[in-house]
Image 1 (cartoon, rainbow, N blue to C red):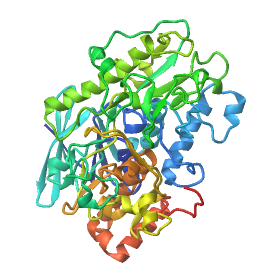
Image 2 (spheres, rainbow, N blue to C red):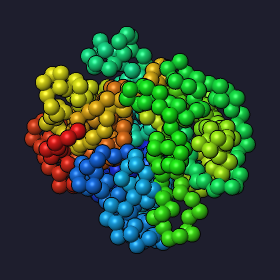
Image 3 (cartoon, one colour):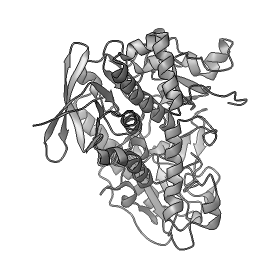
Image 4 (cartoon, one colour):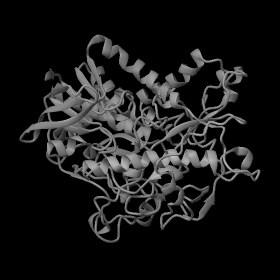
Length: 526
């Protein structure tokens, strides 16, 4: 069994993990980062989710390093791809022109950029990257984590990682139960949090947002790329949830805010509410004629949200069953679209839809990992509630902006966006104000050297809906990386930085110096 001693161990190489590694390495510390899949980047890569961002992202509202990432995505295409002159000269070039984001791009582009951003530290030996490793255990000494053990998914080789600080950047908060760190899962009750949209009855720790196994397709009219019928197609082709207006495999879904039945179409030619443009990651019109046979779009839609059960806090058998169920749902959706989906011309099915296995880097054509919207969450020194950021809750209390956090370590903006849940509940999607990320939400109530770096911070089931998106996760991870470095440099503990005014102000000066915005400018519209 191999053993490695380092300054900081980051378990999970997703969006937050990469940002944490960049920050700690920049501060001069040695870092080991592990990742369960072959690709670092999480939401941006292995989960194949184009960035969800707020409307001011081109001007402000993200960290300097996240903006550098975005700039390098554009440069990735402009430097090496045969773009049209119009696309090349566009300062806010959007590779896919998808309307979910001002920068819809391929997972592989994000992987290339992240590897380039981390490469100086890998080459210098400051960063060791261990892919295809998952954590299987940890050791603690009182309130401190001493080791984490990871295993290689193919060889079975185990590595014991020793460090001064540990960061949990896993998608499900895997280190929390392993280390005995206090945490919360699922949906809190209204009696616990006083949140207007929390559960009216008892809390439900297993009521979590749906997961989605994303996939990419292009479309070649006149060709037949129909996949083999998925094993669970018969089930999914007949499945209808009580709260859903039609079968899961149909074009009719509930509106995410009003829950009114909404009819979608596949292509722009069939109607305005089309899915093709929603998360399109390559627009063939951005490239010289003949370069692309088709646009490429990413399928992360209501129809492949899987909510039949959670994938953590359950037995291994149940976890694997739900992970397979999510895959089968996505493959069934594709097969349904290829064979049975109603078309505007009266025909059935779009056999020209081609599963782009190369885009996701997998044999089955699905993303390497499911998009997981909700994690275990630390019991933190401070927990962000709906009353802190929700427009309705804030206005009812006489405020017209989000709560101000004096311990801010960053900012974000996204609606309180919760997808259907394993508790058989429909969307919860309500307006929020542009918000801050309080340092107290990154600090566990007891553990001294373990920090969260993504959606496992001190938020609730409700507020997680705003804090889980790409630029916010990046900011959380970056703040965690700088906090661990700051604490090692000053020989202080995270809770001391949070509770001591002088330490807090010094740490915030460091963050500001490194390009992390701590507060929003005045914004007239939300």
